[in-house]
Image (cartoon, rainbow, N blue to C red; front, side, top):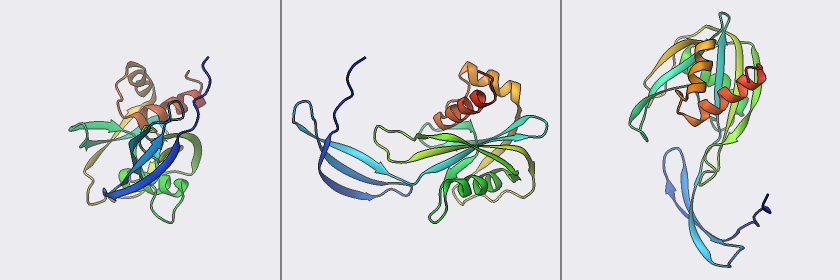
Length: 184
């Protein structure tokens, strides 16, 4: 196994602007291996939360929505950005209710990952909500248009193993869920 890389020194930082969900900056970074500096792009953004929501009859809630980066509809777990003044637990509760109309009382924190550590600062927090039931109407943001879908747990596991789910936050949350529930 190779030695861990040394830390790069930030020589300077230049703010680039507000990009709605993120703010961008260029960091001039010094390579510890050769002393050369390179301009790196960094997107600063709020953390987010997503939820593996399981109903009493062992179905998992998903949302289908258009994703602009890939120009396609994607089936993924409900979730969203942590709003100012709330923590990621509060965001998970709110996002599940807003995007699906479901809520539940049995919540477990599954862990978190970096959204994309190559150039983004934020983390995605994964939650498990068990015995969820529909309690509210949907309350979508102005920029949301999604469809709620239920899928039996066994089918979710088979689709996950086959690579059906392509959103990395969904793939990772399901991995943590399946490990916790001893599927794998």
